[in-house]
Image: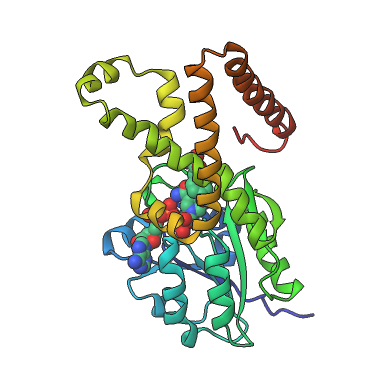
Length: 301
Ligand SMILES: NC(=O)C1=CN([C@@H]2O[C@H](COP(=O)(O)OP(=O)(O)OC[C@H]3O[C@@H](n4cnc5c(N)ncnc54)[C@H](O)[C@@H]3O)[C@@H](O)[C@H]2O)C=CC1
Ligand SMILES: O=C(O)C(=O)Cc1ccc(O)cc1
């Protein structure tokens, strides 16, 4: 009889914040002693919090120490920090190690990592389409990925077995896996996530364009303002990185949005009630359709 135990999976999470923390919590909750999770953040305080919240077993301020002997490395720092971090840890990874990231933009990160990889280290690009407007491990919880879409990009050169290993790990968080190409991901993430964050910020910044009315506006603020601006409270560093690293789709879609708004301005100026009505009917019809199509899949909207 073979009494040898399968070795524990060693997962290293670089950037144990909201996303890295939630990933660690979900896997620790599911796999318990069958997983060993090391984590890296920039402060002793957040490492302590991550350990107390059961997102990691052991914390390191040095990313190189954190990845020693790791089977899988989960990169969940802000987007512009991911490639520099990969450059730093790459010489210290064990042969066969798999890198995967949670960055909100994909071509920018994936193309650079693919150029850096030696033959015996693999990379699978990913993006959990879930989150919050709050940052840090204290905002994370084990169910953050539950029933939410998680994009996996297959065209990063990793063998099918390696992709399967990452997919199986992510499935343990109860996320719904969707596969896209790098370009599809970046275009869709721009429309469905990046543009909404930029426009939510614009809605709030509009208040500053009308300083004399600011106080009265705040008194009036209710459901509509809250519904459309929650994500304007998101982390500015994270969103600056996203805009820089997915600039082409974002500029294209913002320009389309600009022309949609110009169209409404014209219709309102002309008092063209039918055109204004059509504008709202079009959006209501589309949104209701999306709600209907996705109601069993995700609580997306
Ligand atoms: N917040 C969200 O809702 C979502 C975020 N993402 C992506 O996930 C990644 C992480 O985002 P969050 O967890 O929200 O951020 P967070 O701010 O909660 O956590 C970021 C982590 O990265 C570390 N970090 C920050 N700057 C660093 C640096 N210069 N060097 C080394 N480590 C550094 C921090 O110590 C922290 O542990 C980002 O790439 C973001 O685009 C993806 C899906 C949703
Ligand atoms: O807070 C929300 O509703 C979000 O939209 C979170 C979010 C932020 C960034 C992403 O790349 C994906 C999801």
